[in-house]
Image 1 (cartoon, rainbow, N blue to C red):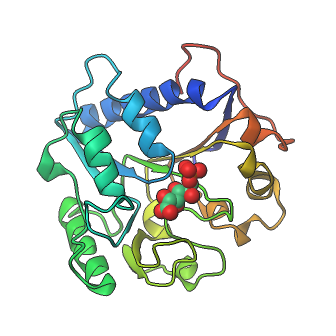
Image 2: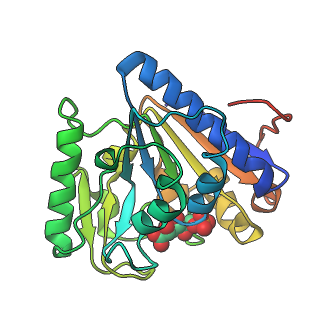
Length: 253
Ligand SMILES: O=C(O)[C@H](O)[C@@H](O)[C@H](O)[C@H](O)COP(=O)(O)O
């Protein structure tokens, strides 16, 4: 791993523009070296942050982006629980990501078939990789330490062959989902968590400082060769004792 950076902002409002500039800078780097930028999105608060901040970037060109989902809920796209549905109405409608460059699930399938279908889509998009190597994955962390749809104590934490796995007993509703597995998460060139709010403070202390952090799925995120960022606000970072970075205004990551 290239080293973990824990970066703290006074508030979520100040975190947003820096996250957007991180996305833009990794996009520029990827496009200039490989001709495209591959981005994996998660739901939760990221939807609002990205939908506000990315369209506000000057001259953002997403025509060479390929976008996938770190996990997705098995519901139709017009269901308010659909992560794709939220991004479609709040973000994709405002930026020029080509429609066919957004890799969506087929929500009409069974959860098993849906995971197989999404695996085929990712393999087609990453034909040269055993496990897809995304340029950037954006992750959230739940109050139980879950990330993607990888939940504490679940057998999927040990999945090391599949690219995408089905889950039909998600402790957080809806129960049926598909999720990227750890081999994909940890193959990425850059992974960034975004975690804000005081309700995350205790679990963040365990994940970032705990002796046995691996009981928390988020603590198992450690890209083999890539960068790892934890972008937090002050309330989320309130219990941390480790060294954190506090960027000045206009600083980029
Ligand atoms: O699929 C889900 O149920 C959510 O997407 C969930 O996994 C979310 O990403 C985390 O709970 C972090 O949520 P916040 O970003 O809102 O803290």
